[in-house]
Every structure is written in structure tokens, then in C-alpha cells.
Length: 406
Image (cartoon, rainbow, N blue to C red; front, side, top):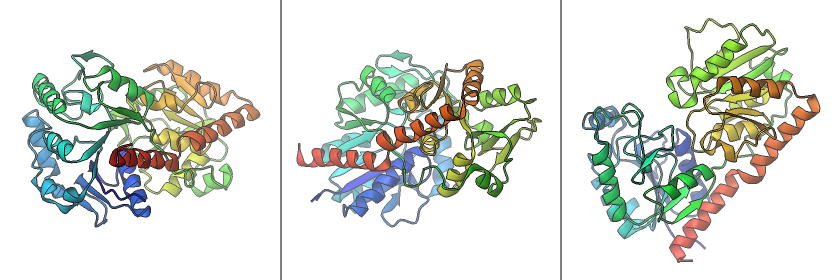
């Protein structure tokens, strides 16, 4: 019997990669009969156990203020959190993304003295001055170097030294366990200012009862989705398309241009429309919210192209693999935990378009039996190592160990 109560804190409740993990946990705990609440910067669900720091309309103002003052950790009021019964009753506070102009990081000191604290690092922000990803492993005095002030979370002037000093002071007076979702993130933490904190590896998980190869054939699915039946389909997903810097749209576009005369290949781009692209071998699809429809696109395709420039884990990669779709990706971040080179996909050299193209050719040059082996290997890799059930049980064990002092 688990008697503890859990409060999760993050930027969002049910949208985005990091939020999906906290949302899954929240609902899993409630199903187990465990008291679970959430406090978020921006609420989009109608769950009565989810509370927001501010009305959503204040989001833009908070973001602009943090950019103008070059400070995304100090200007936000946490009285609502500390005055709430959700916080007062909680035994364990599980932190997720704390950037997004909603959370005063100084509150970590008080929280960690009153509660057991877990912090899952969904990106590099806890170990940098302000940015969620640095696109390099350059480090100075225990903090990774943000190269560009415009990188999210954006600041308008160089306040990096002050932000690092603030974080250092806060961490010195706070107590928390860190969870990393990938071996890449584990290595980053071990080299950072937070290297002496207790650290666990818990991979993100996906629901393999939903994300699995569709029962219908590719031909049936393609007709349903209005996709060509007689071509090789290369799938690419990026919410926001070319405006999503993390997902490497420029490299996707370069691969598209390479095959523009190849009438046997077509690219399906989910999540963004680039009206300037004159290539006729791209089919643009609005962002797909429905899991069931997304599974259809995965299952109807022949290859998943994912030239992400920064990725702490790669949920969409895991989803595609669970549906039996071979992946061609840059060798970056946590994706190497998922994709084994030439076993269930192809890991290209970072920012190397030519190697991406070699990866596409490698997959399409396979004999049908070899392709099926890679497809089956992808499914088994996710099913055995990255299922949602496995992730949830590991978090439950972590909570139990913290609460019962094991």
C-alpha cells in the first residue's frame, strides 16, 4: 500500500513531450489509488486535480518580461503554490520543466527542505544559464555554455554569469534527486555542477498498446490517408515546421531537394507548411493530435526521417519504431539509446546531410527480408525497453524508496 501523495510541477499539463511524461504519471498514480496533483504554468486539460500558477493569458507577458530582464528564474510568484492544499498535503514533489516564465527557482530551496523532491531533466536548462539546449557539450565551471542569447529560453542581453550564479547558490542550498531520461543526459549531469546529486536513469516510455503496427495494410492505410500507394514514403514530423529549430527542418529540406527528381519517393511532412518550397514531392499534413491517426501515418510510411539538432530522448522516434518504422536520424542526444546503427535504423553523423542521404539509401536498398528484420527489431527494442508500463513502475519504485527511506 502506497500512502504517499505526489505533486508534479511543470510548464504544461497535457501538451508537449515533457508534459506527456508528467501527464502519464499523474493519471497512472490516480489509477493506482495514489493521491496525485499537478501545478503547471499553463493548463489545457479540464482535470480538477491540475492547478495553474497564472491564467494562460499572462503567459506572453511573463515570457516578454523574462526576456527583457534576461532572467527566467526570479520574477515569478509562488505564493499560490505554497498556500495550496495540493502543496501542503504532498509528500513528494516531482519537478519537470521549470522554464517557460512561470516558476521562481528560488522556491526550490523551501520545497526541498519541506518535501522529498524528484527533478526529471527533460532538457539541459537546469545545467545552463538560460537555454534548453546548447547544441554542444562545451562546459565552464560546471554549467554548459549557451552560444546564442536567442536560444529558448531567450534573453535580450547577456546576463548569463548572473543566472549561473543564481542557480549555483540555489543548488547549494537545495536537496533533490535527479532523473535523466537517457544515457546522454546521465553523462551531462555527471560532468556538471550537479554531479554530486543522487542520479537515476529512467527512460521515457510510450504506450505500446497504442503505438504498434496497424492491423490494416499499408495500401489500405494510404488510401484512407490520401497518400500515394505506389511510392516510397518518407515521414517527417515537426510541430511548427521550419520554425521549429530543434527538429532540423533545413536538413529535411536538403534531403528533399536531393530526391526532387526521384518520382518513386515522396515526403510527408506533418506539422508545418512551407509555401516557398516548390518541390512537388512533399505532402504537407497539419499537426496530427490523435494518437490513432498518427499510428496510421507511421504504419503507412516506409521510413522515418528525424534530423533533430537537439533531443534529450526522442518520443516520436520511439513511437515510429514501435510501429515498425525504420529511423534515419542524426547521432544526437538520447536517440542513440533507441536507434542501433544498421540494426533498427541508421545513425547519421551530426549535421551531415550527405550521411542522412546515405541512411535513406541504406534503408531503401535493403531486400524485403532485411527490411522486415529491421522493422521487427525496432518493435522489439521499444516493447522490451521503452514501454510506458516500464517507465511508470520505475517512477513508482523511486517514489516508494524516497518516501519509505529504502
